[in-house]
Length: 375
Image (cartoon, rainbow, N blue to C red; front, side, top):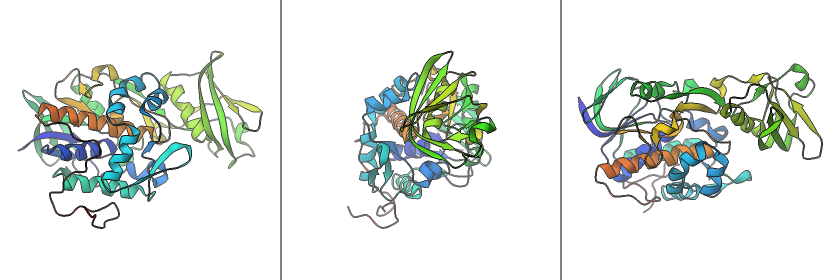
């Protein structure tokens, strides 16, 4: 049986950033990923272009997340802000560009380059990542945790769960992290689909399939009052209505558990229409999951469990979700780094510069395109 300082379960955006941060601190770390390759959902982000974050202040981002997510994420976003994320990627060999709507992408606009950066950082930081490692059990010990996979057992002083939500289960997000959290004493908020389109009566889309309306404003109304408002694109699909304005509206529906609500679409050129959806599409198709490990059971200053010392969380395994446009990746990155920094302090490691690249331990560093990077 092997032993390590930190075990990270999950090889998605949060788990990979956590591994990179652990390498920067020199922590003895093992990452576990249930799929045969890491970053499966990361490769899908932003239509494979990988919308990394949004080029706004951390205060504005906290406001956009809304209650209860924004206040909970405040310490993480102040420690690793959207601008800090852009500096970190640039310092590690991948410059970013700001596109329409303040969306930030890698300058190559290839999600595969983001994944390559992370795997390079794990290698250069001496962090091991075991793929095809399905975790079967998590057991608390007197001084740490024992994690049993289908092929081996490992013990660690600290455990970081970064397994994501339950949307797109083929990418590896199957809700197992929430199950272990529940076994370890945590409450789990019910799952609902976030950032998803709506199914509607056929009459709403008849003769309009494929129509796209730019720059609409959507009001979410329930019981005669305004619940929330979004802006963006409105698209008519063969299955219903979508587009960024509509998918962002679904967050209000999910967060408030609305059943009887109306979507009022206000067009830029004037006029409006009201839609009474039949419901949202399946959670398996949602960009994010609303629900997960209850936020009031996690210390927002460290991402450590209030129920089980030494247990940490990062990313969408928690009841954390944000609008479209890079918010959810920013939340994953920021919470991961905050959690690892807390573990580092527990192990006597001093804080690290937010933009400092990991020092290579296995030969010259390479940039995201695979070429050797000059130092």
